[in-house]
Image (cartoon, rainbow, N blue to C red; front, side):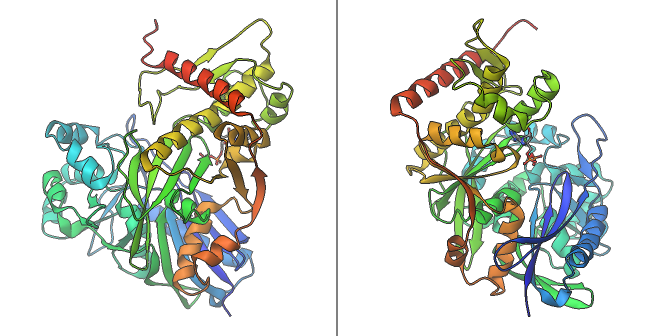
Length: 495
Ligand code: ADP
């Protein structure tokens, strides 16, 4: 009797194995920190073999912890930190270099070279991405240029590349070299319109086609892994943000999810239409299932939950981040105070790397409560900026915003979010939406769950916030925010 789907969530800071039952509830979880190394300023790397070992151990541990047997597993799904790149030898399975993490900057120089060659527009048009070292392509090329003999080996067809799910599937299934549409769309090598590796871009980058995995749907059996003597299908894969979009059941065009973590990650489902953004949002593949590929627009806010951490650690205004909810509730409004947490510039839709953070509207009557409230509200305003940009690009008005991530437990923030967006905000009962999304993808492929509409119908919600603000107040408050942001753009203050 199949009772569970197991999800592997291989993230930047931790690797988890989670067990979900048929209701989508978490029945087991084991987690291990992922070690990072910083060989030079700006470089971030991880040990791919160590991650593989950790995953194998967690698979066994999560079953033992939940007193479940491998026979009860319907399938395994994998979700992963996106863009992180591994290159290994086909014959030995040995990585030729550590995994280069998405944030890592060692391939900046390669991107500058490609920009000088005029590749930026082609990349934008074909991959939906902006030319940046964040994505996998320049990381692969960097390894080929910096590891002795690697280029020759790659040209002879002896090396393989993969993002994290590709690496794990290859290890666990004994050599299936595959990826899914969502992960392929983050490599800056995949043409999201023709749904094929872009031969011209590969030639321009100098990356042999033979290194690349086969691109498969996000929900199908890729191979099997032996666990406690039982063979279990690995049947779902998606990058972490896309998996969260799926786990939130954002299946219809216009559905949006926002993850409030250190930063915010917003994705809007745009259905079978790949929408090019006029506001600097990324166009990406949400998933491909049963021969149908769906797209998403993606925007991120650099500083969100980390602004709350700044209240605690930088300003020492609060002891715990959760104190912000009660403190902010001491005042009915910020009384004109705005915090623009442009600590590292501003992302979409402003894209100003020189913007600096600022506090506006101070008077003698301003208290700690106003400042805390204004900082919380800045998460909601920044989210609105991105939602508005998506709305303009797509021409669809989202019905609701589905939320998750650490700061989404803050009820005051969620109510303000609903008010300022004039949109219902929904928080799911299962907050582990990323792992759940991968589980759904795997469970759908193996018949554990019937279909997507079954999943959407059974999605449990534990917080619904409905807008209760007048239009004129909303317009006034948001106008004040826009004015504050304008004042921070291109800031050239004395240092
Ligand atoms: P990440 O995955 O990026 O590490 P999490 O989803 O774990 O992030 O969320 C952590 C972030 O959420 C932190 O930046 C923290 O400041 C913020 N946070 C957590 N709880 C609250 C709360 N009750 N109110 C406001 N912010 C919170």
